[in-house]
Length: 243
Figure 1 (cartoon, rainbow, N blue to C red):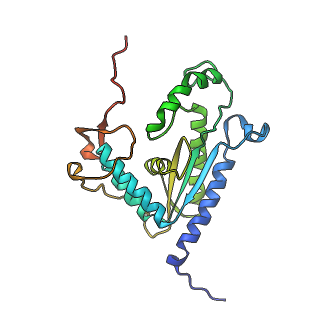
Figure 2 (figure 1 turned 180 degrees about the vertical axis):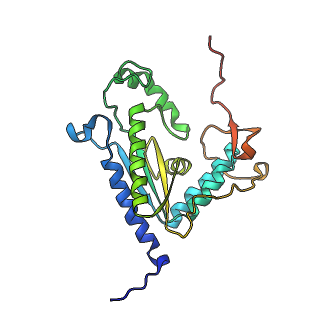
Figure 3 (figure 1 turned 45 degrees about the vertical axis):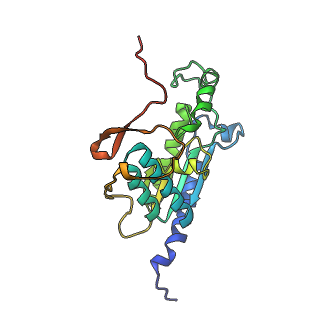
């Protein structure tokens, strides 16, 4: 049997198949405490694959609106990536995450119970922000290990992968994912990786008319940094000097 492969025809299916293996790698990556295995507690990792054009367009549209609010061209660059890639795997911490009960103090509190009690109000008030927090530091490390394990799997299978947070913010705000915070792994199978060497577009923020995303913070007018890639943001509350 002789089969001539049409790479454009198999791109989508191949990338999604690898994304599923990446999700498996994220789930099997080590987690602090081992409660999911040793104590039978529920899985706190969320893995979502997006590959359809309509959802990717919704993500890129939201990111452009968010970039206008923050007055940052980096959001426009990542919006172009979302339009161009074959699929995106989101890996994040579900809202029902739980600490490993190590009482390690990395969060600044003596015990996990103290941390959860003291910060519950802050987490509730963070709904208007891009991600919700604060989150246990060890669970953040677990998320990083899971993302690294997923990215390793993409590399093993020669699928181009770029880890991003802005796409994950868009997915969270659009209700595609529920995670308190997450990382987007943008995936493509092309002769040149679409997520690298992408130029920052020229954007005139003063002439853009896009709907508000209802998300904070927003940019300070005239406070561009690094040629407009970044911009200073307004605090939600006045910052007062500490003694």
